[in-house]
Image 1 (spheres, rainbow over the protein chains, first blue to last red):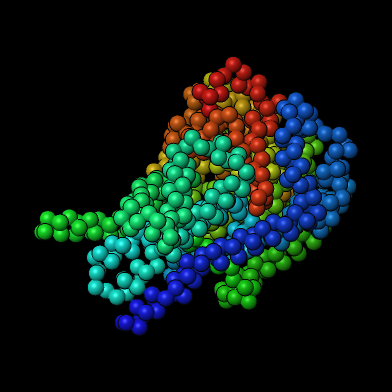
Image 2 (image 1 turned 180 degrees about the vertical axis):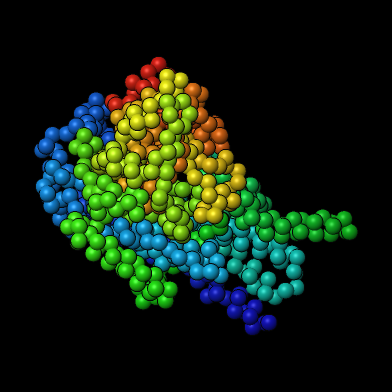
Length: 310
Length: 327
């Protein structure tokens, strides 16, 4: 038991655990980006997104000249000629010249998208789907709406560590003798800084579009909750070092860091409301927060009963 | 619905054995179709009179030059169109739809019933219908209410052709579409009981008769995959994606504004009209910009256009209407 506690107390135990999501996420993310990049260098993708952006930014009158649905033959050739013919090998339509042109996917692509799956009897559908998802991850999941996906994932990771760090103190108060719990509690600062680190990643992804998104959405309450939480966390992160503790004095430092409890409702709302805000999602957020809230509740009752007894 | 925060990607060598059987079956299917195709002297899926597969008639299609991708855009990659979309009948996870919709759901043969204020109620086989009216390809922008968008080459025909065939009476002011409700093939009915199944959608008569309003039976020159609403779905490019109901089984002509699933579920979030409008935000997020699927990294999200870029074509339908009120 002592030995386990000693291992757990080591920073070489905690640090990899805190950094593991970063490795998985960044590997997955950069793979997704390189996949997108490959696509954009293939002939079918030659019309760049930058073109579209610049087009849509022009003033409305000009824009509609470009948006016409009747185009000259010249334009038609520009869109469809050459590049599309090369990419769709063996496709129909293209061979007969541009008058018969149509966008056609290859049979392989079609087969991959429409492959009939057979669920063997006795196999759980959820497990089957989970396996299929893993298998296909490199195919689709990485590329489609990649930033939105990682926005959610970094946010989830940050909240997960936030919940862990809030479990540590109550665990210590409840199991005051357990060596393992004390060992875990040595990592409170590290886990707290981890929360901040993933929150930064989450925020960077939110600003993938510059400040546009913030300008568009600042008035939404769940966005405000998230931003307020982030500001609070940054203050706590900045003061998470020995020097700050000495400068503030232990008591004041402790008082300051109790602000963290205010972040709990803000992040609960932030998670429950982000995205679809369906009953399922609110339930999911509550399930995430439940163990931590339970431990904090037990700690509080213990605290108050001890106070009464004295 | 808790998901793992990250997904491990297997190496090619790690494919499970079960994949092997599926693959061989799969090859067989293709071989058979291919040989048939060769015999007919045409390419795959262009088999004349192949009525066994409901929506396979009509291919290959010709692109209608009036409906090209808007300048500067390109059709979204097929794998994203077919691998990332909503279909709540199966799941709320956009990445999972394509698996759950292909677990034995049969979409052939498929009949559409037409009723309500019509001269004579009809029952149509999709295959026969396609043979009769013919299909063409059109490229439309597709804007989801969740602020992402695609550019999709649809194959199909104008809804007005079907309406002409149905001969609605003068009482018909709206068109109501309904899709299937088969609890055996799709788990959504059970998993999300809060929605008013089956999925229904509606259009005003003049919207339904508009040249842009389309019934799709294909994507990218191939029959529409299950996950995208096989074998026949609505496409209304100037409205948010959920208006474009999938897998239609019934069309009714009504004199009152029909109830629609999303309008019933959240009347303050999803209006009956649901026209794409960057000026009217969804209560929980902004509609000013959209993420073009297939872009990532630090690439700007593109500005959303009023009526999804089809303002010139459709704005007259809503003349004098307060689009903030009738969102």
